[in-house]
Image (cartoon, rainbow, N blue to C red; front, side, top):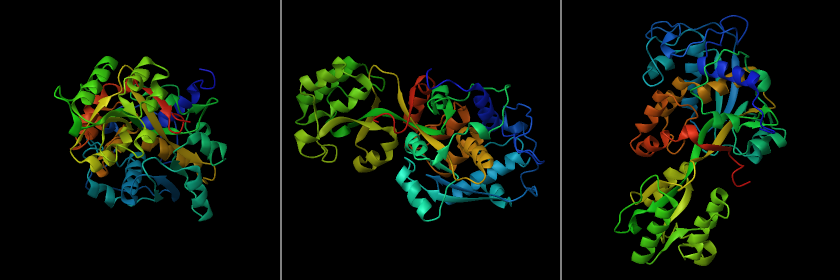
Length: 394
């Protein structure tokens, strides 16, 4: 794993802080020795109806995330509750009372800059700095570019070290692709997958294809579209080369006249609804669903593992409290109660968690719009091929 050697010391550090969050202290040390707990209900807590707050020193953060200010404030209160023994017994992020969280008076303050779902670019972070806004952590659209511009620092130095860690809930590939030159430049916040989107207006008599389609079935299906409709079956097969290289599948689509690109159309045929299928990122789900209303369907890329793109949270080089910022970042990324609450407060259609927690996936699959897709993808995420956002087409 040249250039990507797994730093086990940091991995232990990261997971100790992120999975358990008994790591927070009422005493002097923010990350003391841990007793490993795997169940949120085992956290010492007071009664849910009467939160009692720790008189901790004020800690302030600014974050740039694709979430509302209210949501981020409630996630911070959840973090505070878990760190200070206020997380109620037998509760999870799926059912903890929002009123209970709102009633907690914390000494931790978080300001929010709301980004797009793809996160903040180098230019955006630099523009914020010109306005005297410096996020301590931010969802990053290209972590290598941000690190190269000196806007971020690795997480390695800022999280507690422990070797007795339970690792199974984290999708290892999502974590590994955050490593560059042996350092964690980001923590995986969520991932998207590349998939095929089709117009329901041009489904042949054979019906929509299976979700897990083979390359041969894919070519045959596009051939049926070509025979039955006066549209180009697939838009821009060249875009598939990033996954297939010079594979005969891509060549077949082009040579058999089953694909055309924008230059041939003179316009984007997806927008004029004049093609059968095209490549998308699942993060575009809401956009295409809105534009096509009830007239689209989805299938996996044929004959390859699920290809996932990971969007990282990065630690700002200008942060005045990097230890606390790193702890909150790992909480946002890996704590199952945090992720459950996040899905409750704001739907994240098309964006997948980086942990295999059944409770987290239950919240995602319960979504009335995206849930049926999430159910299908859940079984593939542990074996997906992960790459950091900004590197797929870079």
